[in-house]
Length: 421
Image: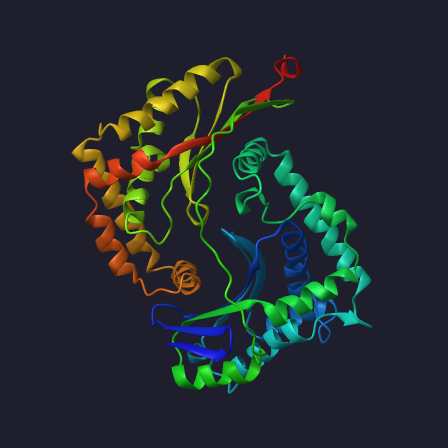
């Protein structure tokens, strides 16, 4: 069931008897901008930490215990031009509780408190709540930058996606985070609650009509005119190779290619197969040639950044192997563009992708994530139809999408060898 519970607010209920839990995913979608990404990442953490009614961590834990160990969490994720704050909670299905306890009502009251009654005084978030979560977010951003591979990928995205959403870090920037004050978060909160496109996904085995009625009563969002753009195509402008040296034991490489295929294009299934052939699976060319045959790295992979129309290739190597590694990677892409793809590899890749799609039907988080993708893309695309599309991909289809791929940027974060002698 898909129901509009307010203008700009959609509820999607997925009936399933596979699981003993009920899960709700509430997604707030707005433009993907660096300042917003920073503020919204902090706000997401603050909302699930404490609220006005449960103003200590102890009280938050107690209410979760009262609700038979319900879970609560938040995260931020980007979908191309859109930035999403997700609040997710899971609770045991009342069918498995013997006590006469209106657990669903209490659960939705709890979620309502978190969203509509934050820990705010005099139009300012609680100072301790703000500072504590600001410190935690700063630590997360710094840890990401201190990880050599993550840093290399971020820099490659910044270069390849200059003035485009790809360059924006999902958690925002340290510089903007340092400047934030508790008062600044109030406008961010009100904007999210009043202006964001909201996609609510619920999965579980309940009386559908009764639960939809209950959730409509408890989560009384106001109308809003909101429908934000998501997918786009990364510009195919060549930025060349950039290099930086850091005190690290290994040299890391990140290469960004423009796919020139959007997530809604008819040949997107062929792009997924192409990515599997190139570097997503153990049978892939990058893994077999660069790692197995030439022993240049421990791991190498390619991944689609689907909503940005990009493909990322990343690996870690020794400094002296940079030129050889880059040459071999380029050779694998070129051989694919020329149609040097065995029937066996094509079929193996399709079977593994189909297997992954079928397995996702048994995981609640995957089902919810898949439906969210359909919701924000405004389409009906059942997993079964996706499986059929992947199964029907031919070698010609794969060659066609490979020929559309163009190199945009390569970033090399080289090891300062003397620091490790």
